[in-house]
Image 1 (tube, rainbow over the protein chains, first blue to last red):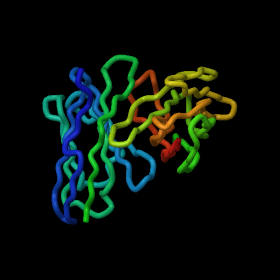
Image 2 (cartoon, rainbow over the protein chains, first blue to last red):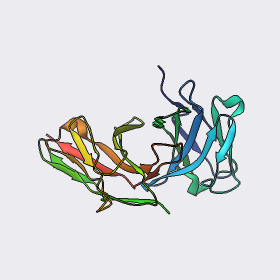
Image 3 (tube, helix red, strand yellow):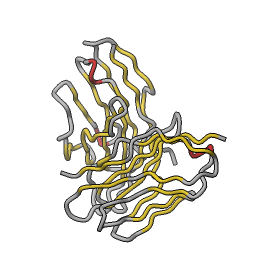
Image 4 (spheres, rainbow over the protein chains, first blue to last red):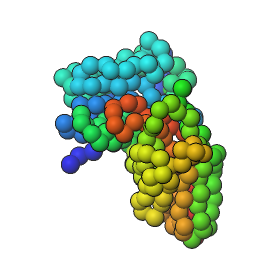
Length: 114
Length: 113
């Protein structure tokens, strides 16, 4: 069974540009989470999808971040326009609809904004 | 709100040394506790978990006991190997529901031969 995949693995963009990160969860997992780790700090929650609906987006830093999950399958996280402080590693995780609710993580996308 | 505090790294040990990485938490209710590990170039993997007080999670020679009285979940291994070199994250969440995890800052472990 394929795990959670993320694309790209690494992205380097200039301040003001746009970047779109993609996450493909484990097939059949209704729950999808985005997290971010900035500069060796703790991994912080960004938002949670249940199928195609945003269950909780309380961790989204500002309106430059837009997450979608069309059709309840893969998800995208767009940053527009990117700022220097957006640099970090963006992790995606998925879990099944019923217990146990173990979250399976992808390898992350390292975003560098210069 | 909920929070996790874990010891700062990096930690450097010789092979076969004893490892302890401290983790304490603040939470309302009865959270579940987790240790995740990130090996170089890979994603986060669940290492072990405990869902209630006094539970001991174990995997790959690592152990951690859920101590409600001290709000702790320290990670231990009796004899580390070079292959254990990784970043270890303590996390808090709900094992009975789909809620976001709250992570500590991570501790980088380097084991030298």
